[in-house]
Length: 282
Image 1 (spheres, rainbow, N blue to C red):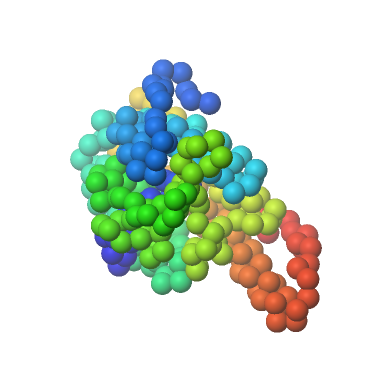
Image 2: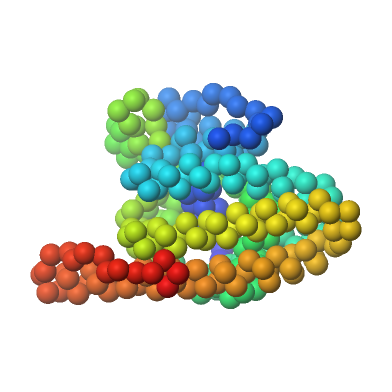
């Protein structure tokens, strides 16, 4: 099973990667005057429920990453509001489902960072994502700090140890503000970040599937005879789970093919070739 520290690391990465405000949302200014101020601003956003503003703390590597972060802002705001509704309407069931999903979620995390997810595992991941998307990170932020690297760089730490063993960097930009940088150098993790157009198309398809799951849940719990949460989750798993299983399989296939292609090019000393044509659906 994934250790507590590993779960915290994963929660931090997902939150960093996953962060048009909706009507009625509060908006305030958060400091990025230093690396520690940026970490504190992340904690404050979680406490305030202003998760849609998390992207403002992140420096995207390229336009595609920035586009994805911008699209995830509204989704995470909806997830936060939906989780509050679910916990108010189904408190006991939500607690039981979260406990089950948290236990199952770390059982098959491979040491390399790759994960083979079954339909049941995707259901557990959707449970955590929809019922309590930011709860773990909010509760664990007291364990997060920074260590000095150089005058323009700090590294994020968990319990005084570098996150992921090497640390997520916080760097000062030309505008004087300090931003989180999505790591590109962590073995196993960096290779899974989308890099080709084909991988970005699959990532966007997964984003759409999660969005559809959120919209379906919103409609279902608004019905007069919505039923028990366990019934809603079972139907959600049937409607959305198979799509995510297929899409994740395609994504892992695409990243593996890229790694093998780069390895061959390195061995032969040839220049990187053009990305082979791919159908976005496989």
